Amino acid sequence: MPHSAAELVDRLGAMSIERAWDPYTSFDWPESLDPEAEYYMSPELMSLYGTEAYEALNETDRKRLSFYEINNFFSFVLLGERPVVGGMTERMYRKDTMGPITDYLHHFIDEENKHMVMFSLFCNRYLGRIYPEKKLAIDREMAPGEEDLVFYCRVLIVEELGDVYNRKMQEDSRINELVRQINEFHHRDEARHLAFGRAWAAELFERHTQDWSPAQLERFQDWLARYFASSWTDFYNPSVYRDAGLAGGYQLRQEAIAHPKQRAFRAEASDKLVRFFLKHGFLKEAPAL
Ligand SMILES: [Fe+2]
Ligand SMILES: [Fe+2]
Image (cartoon, rainbow, N blue to C red; front, top):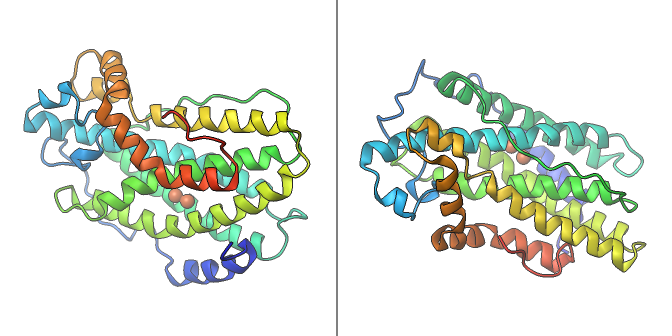
């Protein structure tokens, strides 16, 4: 491994201080946004992109859909960040995180809180609400250290998938400028979080799974494959389609999830993280996404 997490966090923490920003003042927040005035999400990133239903939409319909899709994406990231802040807070100042790791967790939490402020300012002001999430609770016995691994894998999935969208949209001059900037600011912080998350999760995986039985490892790998796939389904939200004025939201969701173009997109967007999970043994085979 190129860097241990402890080596990495010194540099990441210094960058956090140097690049600090404020969600209230770093952007011009207009009073309102007109959903039909422009694109709010890159068309290629919209969950219906490539489907027959999408092809049938006119330009205005597509713009309006993109407004609800971006609110869904921001809601997904925001609600994914909430347990990150909770989980990081619980994990600070523990025996195994004392010192540089905890020093860095302060930055991580600080930045995630700013992200939640930023996304909730957007969704609450322009949509009037946050799209709720549907998460599966785990009710099984955990192997030693498994709870930490489950936690960091969830963090990696929400951050890695979110970052695929951030990186594409930060460069997209076709979309609303505020949305573009939000993606840019988020990506800058997330690049550090992902570097830390990968290094730290890999170390914890080595440390904890040494003592696991093959059955315990397999149960974890099965959970991760299913969790990864289920995270993707949050992107196909019937409420978004309904709010955008499209009929048959649930049907649209099923068609989009099954569509070959969407499958190919999910596989490509997940590729980097899947390779990381395979390399370190978190997964034994690429999951069906
Ligand atoms: Fe974030
Ligand atoms: Fe993050």
